[in-house]
Length: 443
Image 1 (cartoon, rainbow, N blue to C red):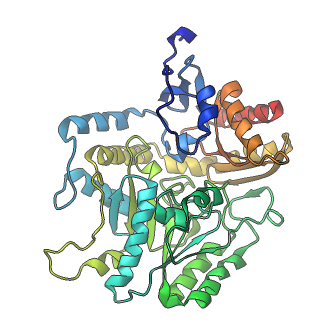
Image 2: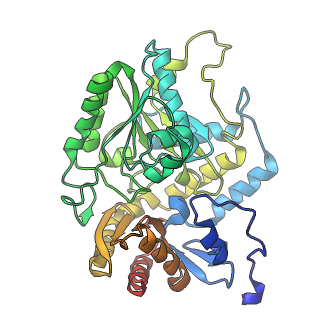
Image 3: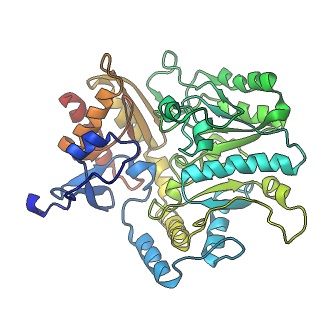
């Protein structure tokens, strides 16, 4: 495709882009027009862009996979929309069964929404409703963690702990507190998997119980590893200790697995990787391979059963979304789970983990690198920031990777985040690392 065949629109003004430097982007847009397997294709000249971030952590099986495309196409011609308030359609029930089976015997029910943000919002409301249904209506307090990302709705923003996501929008929900984050760069450097130091930080929950009273706390929500803030794996034993403290005080434990769910660590969910069972799991992204928006809350029977009281004609949960369990999303979800199973993609992630870690940690001597963290098929490469301009070096690295190295990466402040589709080849892992090195050398 020549430059004259560019498909970049003449006017970019109308779209107010989220989490984007709008003025910079619209002056020099980084646009894609198509995608296939491991690559995007640039809108200006059609060049192939290696996808080092699975879109936004979400295209696990690679782009435009034909079984998923076919399932969505067939669903669109069969049932364009079906409500799930007092009505239903078969595919959404099948998907709920498939996902809960994947999560394991401790999980039996699923609530659907349309994104990770909606999944978190729903889990927080379900947690408070659970205690209300059991006669413990005083349990309304929610506990998050510093440097956590739980989406952008008011509930998720409130329990989240990324300052820039919170500072502009006011105090958020009342009655929210936070555990300290687990990032200890002075003790844990250039790590693979769970980190050695920091398990004692789980005792923050006991401190908050002492401060607020256990009878006021509904739930604790954590990412098994913090993702969007820069890939912060948990200390060894940390999640297990949170589970123990929650059990001791009757507090629900929610794992936000929007990033980790559906194979990112080589297991269906991170709860299986870490051997710790939460009460609820939030998921999205890999649920449909991002082909159609969808999210959900996976829960144990004790959560669901707590709501099943009162007259049978009365709604048990006064919460839901118009597009929850949309037929096209359900079809995409079922086809995606088939691809994961038929191609053994979770097992593939597990098999690639050591090579991935070795290749990423070989970037230790690249310019500006101050730390590297890997877990599963994820890596964070911290860069030395520019004095007086936090995030500028990372931003420039992201732009240069796309423009000069034909590679898409995620940027979190001055960190490069890599989380490729599971179909990445060994040669492409090396190519990705080579392109990151060349990007850093060009800064």
